[in-house]
Image (tube, rainbow, N blue to C red; front, side, top):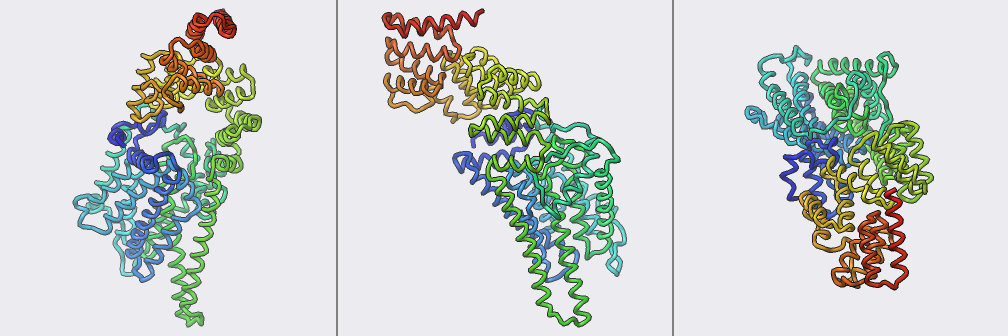
Length: 631
């Protein structure tokens, strides 16, 4: 938690990957609070916060919808309709994608900011002079920039709800006057200023990952239709869509999407004409405006992503609930006028039963999606089924198989991904890992080197370095680790491995420098604290020669040669004349490829115990390996 001020001044605290280091300090702070409270990366605490935030949002939406319904048509049942609309949004099957993806908490917090601004605007009109309604929007934008769409949403509200009317309840015209400018102008100015500020705070390396703007825009016409379909029929949900850029304007999907947008605009204008149907118009406008940040002319890495519909679905929940229940109310009134024999209470209970049935269906759907999100294996298996053209889905599913030792299956899924994306650097890294695990050392190195050629980033350097260290080539690994840290200073893994290799080699000055860098990022980093304090990272049975020597033997047996070398070095502090410790230190160093240091240690072992054949044999072997390396 002591890093909290840095969250608000340094976007690189958001992600150790520079290209992902966008400025979302409030989101980072919420994660830090969860980690602090749980004491670990326990998903339960993070999901609890997601759930509490959703409950708060549901309560605020109930208040917000009630106010809108009152403006449209005062009625005692408005609050009940508002509760139903908010409940529909909260349990909607498609919103499980946002709730289960912890990083999408940014959508929840920014949406809370938008709804909070509307509540202040509607509930306390006198506060508008001081622009207090903009405060929640500003706060929400610190979690995600799309909170600034409050400004165009406010404009839509004014154009739909603040229109002059005839005595028949029809709209006379839009309030395109000084009052409108004074009301919405500050929101737009503040929103633009926020966008400039947030953009300036992003890391220089940050990128949205998008491609051609026009191609992305063309495809989004169909994506809008896709998202609307998910509201009505949320089947086929995928955590990682394989939807691709549509190359032609005359593609039938683009035409269908454009027709949908035209119909959407027409229905919105038509519904805005009468006071009683304005919640429908505003809901549809909310859906469209809510999609603009991610589904218009701002190209993002993924064409479609189903956690992006969280904010827009508030509008569709509002529009559909008001339309359905008001239509049912209107039908009841017309039936009553004809003295229909069915009692009013029966009809009311029928409406309630239908509403509850819809909510239960969505709740069941949400439960089914939660099962999909239960584990990495279930999630990525579902992605391969729903999005079979997505190479990342196949790769990540392969990773779940590799994690349990199913290397042949993992390689098969990696190869499926490779057929879809032959120049995928991360995939090359994973192919290197699984190929090495299956015993093909030469092919493994080929994959690692190709990953470096495709994308010489921190990950490519780190994983190649880790492989080099495992293949008795630690001296070659060190420059790659140094480069990985330079490219991504906040990445923990390269620094931890580099510290481990420096500690094994006995490079104390370099070790202390890297450890200080690690502690500057995380003052409680256990490995850095242990290594700078002259201790072992792994448990040791007592601060003594025997304790560290036995720990070294255990690490040798586990083939953790860097830890073993560190243990034997520390044991020699207690008993410098131990030939056994010198021999085992030399052997450990040789397994890492530190042959000069290994030969020195083995020469010490032979000097201390010249009659021991094992020591002499080890020394001869180490010298021959060093000679081969020089050749």
